[in-house]
Structure formats: C-alpha cells, structure tokens
Length: 213
Image (tube, rainbow, N blue to C red; front, side):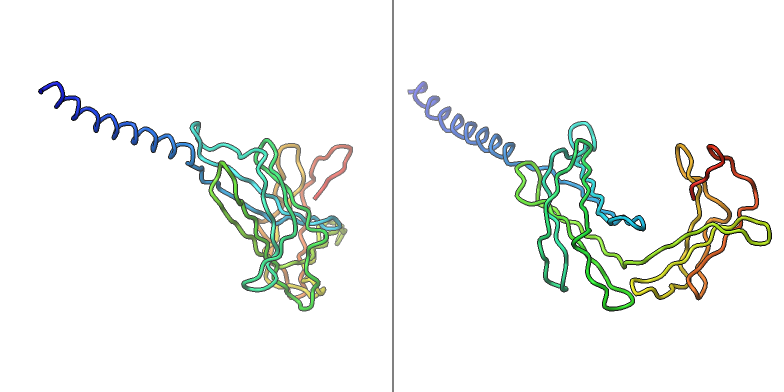
C-alpha cells in the first residue's frame, strides 16, 4: 500500500515539473529584446537631406548593433496622421540612412515643421519600437572674404522662404584629419540680418595651403 501511495504522490509532482519546463521553454522562445532607436536629421547645403538612424539592443555582451533590421519610415502630415514613405534596413553596424529628397514638404510659411517617424514593427527578435524627429528647414550659406586686410568667414542663416533668422548660435570650424578644429569663440549669434562675421586672425596650416571651413 505504501508503494502505491508514493507513486500517486510522485506522478502529480512530475506532471507539474513538466508543465513548468514546457512553459519556461515557450517563454524563452517568445522573449524579445528591447531595441533602442536614435534618429538625426542631416542636411548639407546643395545636397539631399537624409535621416541617419542607429539601432542597438542590450544583449549578452552588453549593447550590440541591431544588424540587417527592417524599419518603416513615416511622415507626419497632421497631428494624428502618418503617411508611409518607405523602408530601410540597418547595416552590420546597426546604422541606416534614408534619403528625404522626395519627401520634404513644400514651404508655405516662413517656418514649417517637419516630423518623421521610424518604427520597428513585427520583428521576431525585437519588441515593437518607435522614434520621431522634428525640425524646421533652414538654409545656411557661408563664404570667405577679406576685410581690412584680414580674412573672415561670413555666414547667413535664413528660413525656408529666405527670411533672415536672428539670435541663432553658429559655430565655425576648420576641417582636420581626425576632427574639426573650432575657430574663434565657442559660438556666434546671428544678427538681425541672419549673418555672422568671424575673423581668421591667426594663420592656419593646410595641405597645399587649402583650408575647408
């Protein structure tokens, strides 16, 4: 009688153990990583603007790049309305670049707000995620001039309609091999006509005398 009683007790314990193992395995298969998205808007004058996107996640070895990951790109046209404008895939470094050449709004006012949303959707490895970037489109023109026998860098900042923008901080830097070198003060605020004027009083060495500001 004792042996049968022991068998009866062991069977429920084994059953509970099997259920626990199965549920743990199922949970391990459905566990998804949390992706971290970052987005920046980039614009170089006389070239097409683009979004630079980076995705990483916390894996077993710390933060790792999310490679070969498909992302959906949307443009916000109203406060609660998104329009799908394309798809982009991250490279082996977890980075992606989306060209905005055909997706910028036509300026109807001096300042127009642009909002883009990047989403990670229906991934087998990652949870759904979303990140947005908002900016106002402006134009920046720079030139080198000579004034009172001193070389200067002059720059003008205007809005999408060409109106000058006052009180914005601009930096002037000269290109170097590893990183740009700041010239003059830490920043210069644009005047009421949207311009700054920065003297280059000390000689700067350059390859064959050429300098890129």
